[in-house]
Image (tube, rainbow, N blue to C red; front, side, top):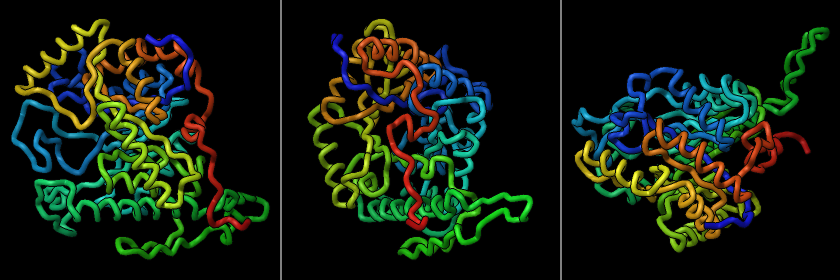
Length: 396
């Protein structure tokens, strides 16, 4: 058990329904009847803010959840259905003061113009605490919801078609970022005496022309309070690592040990350098699913009970941790030494493991000098030590 002070860590939680275990809704701490209410989400985010976490991410998608990769299932014993993540974040924003709000958005099948406006609005509603988690979908049945194109069915998500969807997502975010900059910070004059509300010379066409998008601009929403809200993405292999290198402020990665963490960090840093962004800050957060209890046996028993209810062992792309706050703090500090600057924890049962994170893990990290004891900034970029960027269109 470490007791020496170490570099402060960043912490986020990933909110998904009643939790990341598919049987979480059947846990006594879950609130399945409240899942589609505003109050449920407000309570979760309030708990995360009570623990001084940097931000929450909110899962979303363009199809129903499924126990099968890439295809729908017929199960009726697991949570199915979601609220819109951007709208949930906007509803929760006025009820919170410090914590960042990072809804998931799917770049495939949606339009960057609409998304830029939605996240800029969230940044205004929250007073500068907005971000987004961009993801792609290669699922043919989700493409059928939109009818604009077909995607080939594939057992493998490491194909040229999937790599092209990540290239499209990189262009998507480039359009979004340019639209956020398409109003200069002082474009609004609002001078009642002269009748001038806006300086039209300070609104800019972005004139983006690419293989996937043709967008004129400018946005219809003034530049967000943060200038550029946070762009984040989850990455497991080379194509999404390149997306992180090109466009992300925060990348979520899924190492299962420290050697793997070092290798992933090295690959993402190489992609960042190849994209010409080596001098720009890029946080890498490790993702872990957590079953957190006062002793390890209780955490493992709880996982086993949920596995029995689900009818199969729980598996995840991320490492699954079952144990105590002290053990988890040790693990996080070990991973941090491999080059990760923060962690996105996925509560197995939101009603149990989120309070365990805020009320047992956070105090343990604070005791070690490894986590903040008060919020030190009013914006999400500020919490992560990221400067407000200059506007690319403003005259020097």
